[in-house]
Length: 212
Image (cartoon, rainbow, N blue to C red; front, side, top):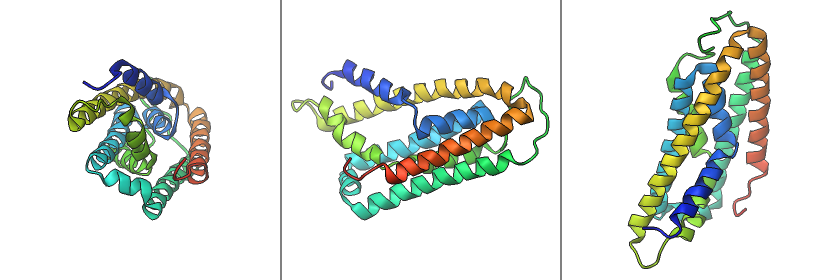
């Protein structure tokens, strides 16, 4: 059993609750496309996190963390995609939307696979996840027990917590969909979402140093 497991659970929960690109994307997808799209977006993000975790276990996470070129490629890909999502939201806000039933979700894009793919790219575009695994997890590892078993245990618990928090944000975003049934409200919401994602792209691109 890893050391200080309860502390790990508490800290991981707080980190998952903190608003960031992942949370904003999941909530916006739930509000604009429906809860299923929010869940698909969260699933894409989690798959990217699991891949990064697996790479860390294999030792490749150290390569990502120490290779400036690879780190920059991942960082700028993620920032560029966040900016693209923001620009697309702004463009959609100037298009006319049909009036929909307020009791139903107000989808902008009906294809849920798009939300999954976007979530996957956003997840892979956040290479600081590797730093999280490399610097945070070892604080809860006991040197007297199996390293692999402890890392897997912490990874599974962390993923479960993150999924639960994402599920909560999905329902929060989904509850907003009824207010977006009115085209005027949806239009300004999309503009706000667009500006937020463009701002996040700038922060990711210029506010995230490799060894921060």
